[in-house]
Length: 235
Image (cartoon, rainbow, N blue to C red; front, side, top):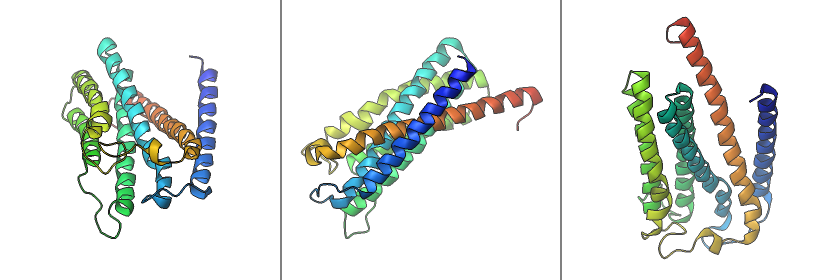
């Protein structure tokens, strides 16, 4: 791909992400929203909490794609891309857990000091993050780079298979306070359609932010690997 084309694409993504994040942050903070029972103004967290999980899922999918590519070609760049996407995915997963815990504290458990109640949705989301944390523990336990790349790629693919089940399918089958679970309406049923005008750009903006963090981290990792090969030692 020509360097000028990559540069133009990066500039477009940067500005699009900045505009979307700025617009939804302003709109999500200052625009009036319908008063939903129990949620009240905490419903604004919808613009932050849910897009973070969408971003994590997008990055885990990207990580799995590069893991498959790594198994097919043994290309070290594919391994770098796969591990980097998984790393950024974990960051967004942790942010999703933090914002979810805060949201639950001020809606489900208002007036108490409870921040975590092992709700099925919370617990399965935490398990999902731990699965990808174990991915990096596995990588750290292997010294041979080729063996590490291939074994980690296999684990990565199986880890991605669990994503839709742990984050979507199983929680919807269990009793939970979380919207969309068995016996509870989904957010689309309890929030006003006007909130979607802010929500969907927020999803795109966060995914764009995840993409930028991923691409810049890949560039840094590739540069570090090149310097290590030239100098013949760890930096």
